[in-house]
Image (cartoon, rainbow, N blue to C red; front, side, top):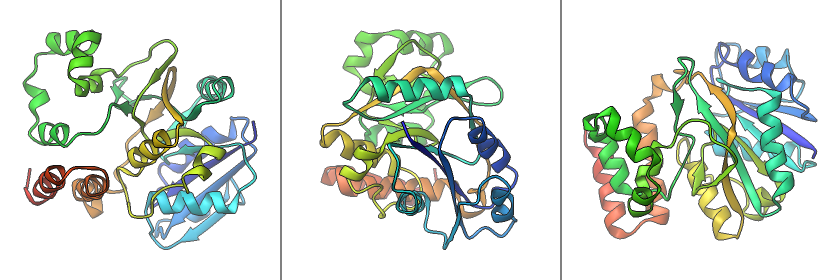
Length: 276
């Protein structure tokens, strides 16, 4: 499988050694970096790892990925990796095997692990505005740890209340069919990517990965989390200066305007306005 690794940088000099160093150890055929108008030396840092460094106005994540794909069209798959992420050859091999062994899969992603050993949310069920409101109100903090563990392992409850699947975070055997996987680290089949025209440029940052997966599923492609593949995610603060919460909710509004009901749209717009 001919694979091109893609990293989008924005003031990422502190993070690029993690992602680009990781890609150097993988059997990828080419690495492309798209720099979104960094002012901290990210371009020079990236050039130390690959000659394929494209500079662009700050167009956001999805548009930058589309630019990289146009620059390197001759590929069977694209490995998207955030600047603050790293993946081992063994975990990458598990992603690659999943695509090679399952022709219906359009995109796969690993489990997300933070530096302190905790596991983050890297996949989930169909997006809902109810989940966004509950998260904004920090309702999950009211749930005792023991009950959270019970809910995370109850298949019956998760079938009844799909948003409980967000509690499934940690390594697991085999593949898990999901509605979406996170763009922090994903391996996407080139044929699938091109079949839907890539990322929707309406999104600047956040929710473009959820939208991509939804459109893939609508075209008949599968989306899966590879439970025995793990990628480390440092969660850099490169978006803090422009307001991570604002960017997240802007993406949320675009997503529900595109895919939600009238009620979803109103609730998304209301959540963007509220300072919570």
